[in-house]
Amino acid sequence: MDSDFRLGDWLVLPKLNNLSCDGRTVHLEPKVMQVLVCLAESGVLVSKETLISRVWADTFVTDDVLTRSISELRKALADDARHPRYIQTVPKGGYRLIQPVMLVAAADASCAPEVPAQVLPVAPASPPSPVKGLRARQWQGILLVVLGTGALLVVWLARHGTSNAESRSTQAASMAVAPAMARTSVAVLPFKSDRRAGEDDFGIEVADALTTKLSESTQLAVSSVTTVLRYSDEKLEPAEVGKALKVDYVLSGEIDRLHRNVTVHLVRIRDGVPLLAATLNQKFTDIFQLEDSLCPRIMHDLLVALNHEEVQRQNKRYTENPRAYEAFLKAHYFMNKPRKQDKIASIRYFQKAIALDPKYAMAYAGLADCSMRLSFYGVSPAEFVPKSRKAAMTALELDDTVAYAHSMLGRIAFFYDWDFARAGREYQRARELQPGFVHQWYASYLLVLNKPEEAEEENRKFWEFLPYAPGVGFPQYYFWVRRYDRAAAMLQKMLEMDPESIQAHLLLGSVYEQQGRSADAIGEFKKADAAAGNETATGALGHLYARTGRRAEALSMMHKLEQASQHEYVSPYSRALIYAGLGQKEEAIEELRRAYAERALSPPALRCDPRLDSLRGEPRFQDLVRTTGLPQ
Image (tube, rainbow, N blue to C red):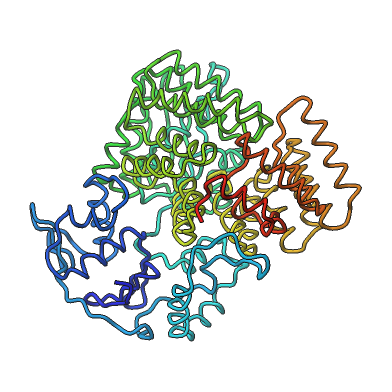
């Protein structure tokens, strides 16, 4: 059923994955919408087996996935499983809709949602867009909806310009997120500690541990420790940090590890009111006991109730060795810092955690992740991919339920093996084990499979859940689909929060280049290059010089890459970009072939990078695409 229909008071728009009623719009995951459509098409009781076979026809899933989808539907419809008005569960039978289903015309906009002006990838007229996620009949359907809601669209455009797309309030409106989906935002400051007593970074480790635990709740958006550290100057009051981070609450504390005592404060930022009934002051024996005593109290005072799955995830320990866990927390902290030496330190701490507990599956998964992050620092895929693969496989041999390890295998299969079927299976398994996981990596996978709308939704969910997390996944998506204004707005906001983000400077430079802002682009590339001496910045800068007629400077960047290759790995992709900018198509395509052979070419880049557009019409480029098995 592609047609719109009414279910009781709700208008259901399957093509947009939206429900709306009384001016409120709820956006559903595509699979959740398919479950609802399947129930509506049937009109009678539908067994679990039938629903799974229809909605997940080509994927192995468990009943838990369907249960979660039904739960999401009930939440969207404000339905109560104990006293249902829309969806009835029949024990050992399946599910059925209680309210009548009535088809409506496409132009019926009496309860239709406000639709953003751009929800689809924008590509240049020539050459054709590398993203081919929509066919002609889908465009016709979208056109009917837009025509039917033209007045609302004008209102939306007047209220929500793209210049403010990065703000949280505008984002909530423009992305049609229902009020029930709003999350309470929290920042956990590094706990102050007595370094003279040998505390080292224990206060940061505690903050990282609490951040991870609190993030298990889908009702909370918790700032990453890496972002918070920028505002952790001891001269700043927690309320000042909260205002800078634009969060609702700030958690802070002091640790006297010598006497095993901790004091905790939770402050509401809008009025400075302490949220805890009284300052929490108590003893602890180790970091496990500290977590176990603090998290329930904090959740209680934030009025957050965890569901059964969240409680299980929060309570699960992957090691019973406190020293191993502390080493893991140190590794996690350094892994999210920007420098190569930080990644090396992270690997050492992961290895220390494993030495302390050889059965620590989560530490192996972290080691797999950090090893792969060396790709940004002049390390060859031939060196880090086997190490990453071995660590992820070891993690799953120890514990097959570690979603993190499955997601890492999915990432390896996708980015390096170009095995899209295997990547899909691993990502799906990770999502079954931990719903809400691997959004950004899975989004890249969906984009390459010509599913841009689903990819955007995956990125959006991650952005809403961890709006201050390091990484540029969501703006990278907007760059790939040529929505440069939105990408720029998000990146500018990220750089306000973390001016030292090399990835953000690099991507913003590429966005500025496509917007024709060459001087600004050069400035961003030089900031990234000065911070890390990264060959990616050199290749990007060389491409821009070539495109703007500065041939000598472009060749100078090529020479710089050749010099760098004498002491570190340099991806042929960087050289390919410069050759493409110079108009030397044969050389550019040959470098792309070499990058693919060395597994230094990513599927999203081959499909979507606008800097390769001049090559896409070349027969040799098309042969390369066929060789890679990139989905068409």
